[in-house]
Length: 81
Image 1 (cartoon, one colour):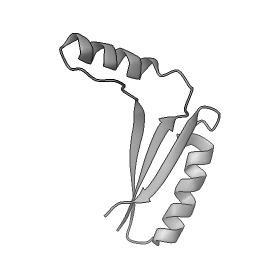
Image 2: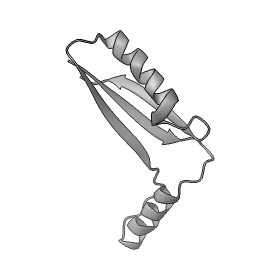
Image 3: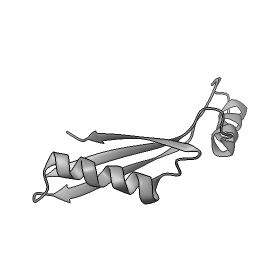
Image 4: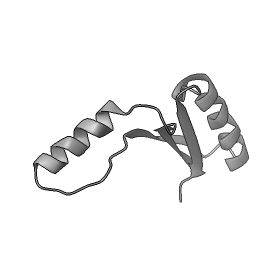
């Protein structure tokens, strides 16, 4: 079974209102945190009939076409397990 993880983050310098609001809430609740960044994590299960190389190739294409916005986001791909 091939399972691929994709982590999507905002590029440095791009405003992160969700992260800023979460940081503010944590500070108000008593946690002293310096920064919070939001992102997305996708776990994509290809099953048994796909090799790791094929899965990585497909996920790279998915990231470029739909999972991320290359203007404001970066992505990291890794094989799980």
